[in-house]
Image 1 (cartoon, chains in turn red, yellow):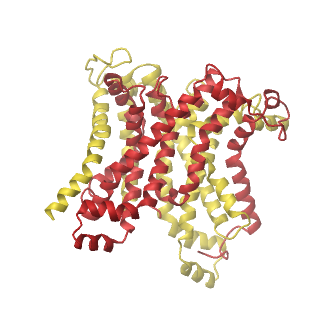
Image 2: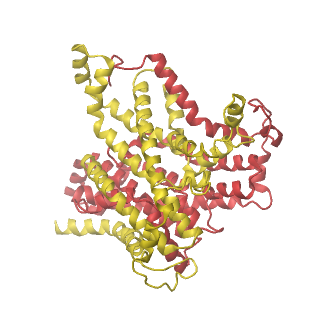
Image 3: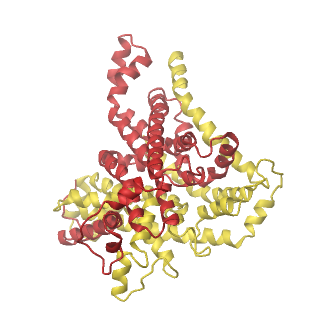
Length: 277
Length: 286
């Protein structure tokens, strides 16, 4: 780590810049959570109230009021995201192992995965809509799991590749010399060592799937709607009830914010496709 | 060895099948669709119309407006995000009081779904109940930042708030991995802060600046979520990005085939930056 000698900013200036940006970046989340805890009268009061008696009525509304189907949206998101992260690990981990240890697939599959990350999602919008309409996958959770698998392959594959590359090869070699088959080696040696990588990929995939909006909007009608789309429906359908809207969004962001605490270390690698460690 | 190869192919089979079914087939189908007159009503029995869809898109003013808006948006937000991300990385590359909390606050938007962040801004900037709107009005500024002429700039600020954490994270990791020696040598030679930044730090960070710029540039060009939630591309088509144009063409106007002609044209536009980015990223991936 470099010392402070070359730093352009004095410590005070550095602190001020970081603090101002930190407040600005987190203000929308803070404001939404505060709004969700205010009564309707407090929400529309001018000037805005920063100290108030909190109420949980909006949360009760979101879950129990007639006409909202928020609990169903939440269940959809949980099921879709869990299924997607589990399947992604199952598909990508062996593939990454093969790429690193056997060198098979490095030439074509890896670049293909990277280019997939860069393609605009709208490329796939109409084809998926038509295929799903014809095959009965429209508005199903299975359909959303499949499309999100596609979206998360680049991230999963690249994290696994860079992770397996750092595992010591000696253990695998000695297991192999002791007569273990390659499958046994993968299962008993690589798999346990790769737990942190698997956790990171699973959590990041969960978050990305939870947050996905374009396909969840286009490929659902009402049965498989996720919270991310469901929360935006709140605005158009019940636009005046800002307290309920704020409560719905707060519930919808909590899981991703909690999970993100676990993966900060892997965040850089994940979002830069392994270009930075 | 033969056994190893067979096992390798077996390990790759699920991923290959997944990519063939979910990427290659829909991708080729997208090209085919761009030559059909498919609409939301007729997509089960479309007719082949050759290049008609391309002619309709290339003579549609709104298509050029959407690309123009996406380009301007991309240039502005990428510039701001790289500069601000670098400034924050420099600011935090030292011991600071409350550094962990500051970093957590700075990274918060990265984990919030762009669509949900968009709704949060609808709440925060709402003309009547938005807290920010209230203080703007109280200080004599225009209160409704979600209306023209301010709305395009508001959208850019939202993008900067969401994605500066991304550039910050990359550049911060880069700064921390810079070795001490070249910096110390420059200090010994009597270089000032700006000179060290210009001649030592920036050259060492260049690959990461490019990575951050490429990824953000391509992603910013295809922005959909936040803008769809905040303005749906409006009022009129003032804030319609390339992605929102395709979405409106397909699912609001119902011209599925024509929307795909627009997709093919966009891919053509993006092909050069994308191939550059892939080359650059793969060079740095082990």
